[in-house]
Amino acid sequence: MKILLTGSNGLLGQKLVALLRQQPEVELVATSRGGNKLAALYPDVRFVVLDVSDAAQVQQVLAQEQPTHLIHTAAMTNVDECELNREACWQHNVTAVENLVQACVRQRIHLTHLSTDFIFSGEAGPMAEDATPGPVNFYGESKLAAELAVQSSTGPWAIARTVLVYGVAHDYGRTNLVLWVRDSLRAGKPIKVVADQWRTPTLAEDLAQGCWLLARQSAQGIYHISGEEMLTPYAMALRVADYFGLDAGLIERVDATTFTQPARRPARTGFIIGKAQRDLSYQPRSFAEGIALVSAQNEISAR
Ligand SMILES: NC(=O)C1=CN([C@@H]2O[C@H](COP(=O)(O)OP(=O)(O)OC[C@H]3O[C@@H](n4cnc5c(N)ncnc54)[C@H](OP(=O)(O)O)[C@@H]3O)[C@@H](O)[C@H]2O)C=CC1
Ligand SMILES: Cc1cn([C@H]2C[C@H](O)[C@@H](COP(=O)(O)OP(=O)(O)O[C@H]3O[C@@H](C)C(=O)[C@@H](O)[C@H]3O)O2)c(=O)[nH]c1=O
Image: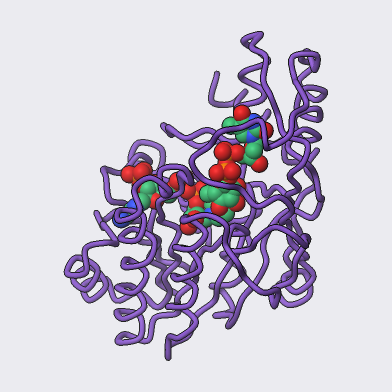
């Protein structure tokens, strides 16, 4: 197998590089639009610059590399920024996928595309793969349009939908719920955390494993790849405080209505992951195990 990965500097991208470089049957090509953040960490991994919104570059890189599989993680993932800058969001999240689909069809490349719980309205979670979409923000709309482009492909494809991903990444600007709660409490900073949203939070390593399982068997169709536990961000925050022995008194329980974010969030998402468990033997860690792994990784990088 020759796997070309997009978005290799991102949270999931980094975990996939770490996982795929260890698979003896895989020849890996990591790609990102900027310089390679993992160059020093994994000098053995081949890296090529690729901005997926540039159709000519997509065509040129895929023609040159001739992968058998492509895992597409790159996207504009700041939900509020997507709401405010819709043109850029569409270009990176939809036009880019149309470019990739075209090239994959032409070269018969198996495409694994990353999608989100935010394609749903959030009234009825946890949801199975065949639930009806209805995004409540522009990021969700863009990811749904991208899914439709993938689903209309005449080539082989899989869609991995996921939920609230957390983990530690190298030289990485964006934070995530577990790190944000831990770091705020460590700094003695009070935080407001919502108790009226429900999610099945996903450890980045588990998601990478799910994507690898899909690509390895050239799976076809939509798969929900997330954690298994339905939790509110408030409940997650309490568990993080407890694990790290931090002051839970700094966590204020609030409703989403108290936030004034540009983009609306769906209230109750979360996934039923039985299909991935059955078809792929996907087995995510518990949220407690995920926090423990995050903690161990930070200890290693602090040494
Ligand atoms: N994080 C989450 O909670 C969830 C994520 N997802 C989906 O999973 C996927 C992976 O997410 P995650 O790893 O967390 O996201 P990150 O934001 O960590 O990584 C996304 C990467 O995509 C890159 N990128 C953006 N636009 C382009 C482009 N035009 N060409 C090349 N690279 C580009 C970014 O580059 P740069 O570093 O330069 O900004 C970034 O490194 C995404 O498709 C996302 O929609 C779904 C549900 C939840
Ligand atoms: C900033 C903030 C977030 N939260 C909660 C709300 C939310 O459920 C959770 C994460 O908030 P964020 O704004 O970081 O993330 P958000 O943009 O809501 O998260 C999403 O990212 C995109 C890419 C996805 O595809 C989704 O699956 C989802 O995880 O934390 C609070 O409770 N208090 C806060 O001050």
